[in-house]
Image (tube, rainbow over all chains, first blue to last red; front, side, top):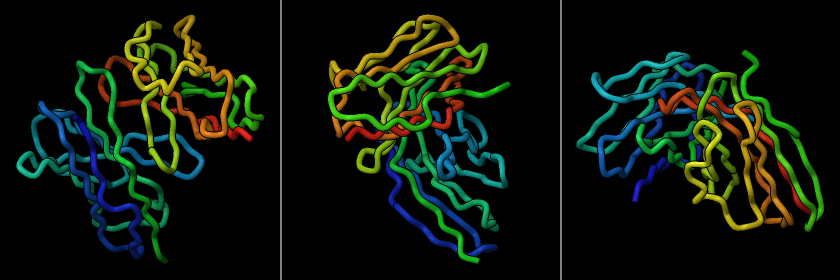
Length: 113
Length: 113
């Protein structure tokens, strides 16, 4: 069965520090992979997506993610975190022909001043 | 564009009452999704439509839940009768084609007493 695992429920980093959020997926075919961000009281917003090609993808707000097929991972990174990055981050997997996404449980990011 | 519009933003009701959640997708989008978010289960897909036709409703919890999309600009999710375990945030999202780039509304927070 398809699944997405985000091992870290909550992460706290200092402002200016680097960030890596982990995501592992289980999918029978080559997946489409996504990272979404949710600010408190808001809906989810797409940060970046991977369909094919270059395994390092750039997104909005200075985020990037790397697809590693051998590890079934799609980790999200940012070199320097800003206080406004505090939010919940969701990894998702899908396949165009299936029309829906499966989301991980999310990782809540807190940023210390 | 105005984005995906959901109403009501908050609903408090008593067990046994009927609840109707509404969604206006982004104009021109041909996919519409209903998700439910809870602390315990995370983000779950309930049902999605393509060109107003329900494609997959396997996520609808039980017969108390129903969803309709009478036209391209409006969808409803109805719970009748409601139960306390239905308390959650319900999100509507839409997309153009299936690219995985879903545009989410701000959600409807439902509390069933």
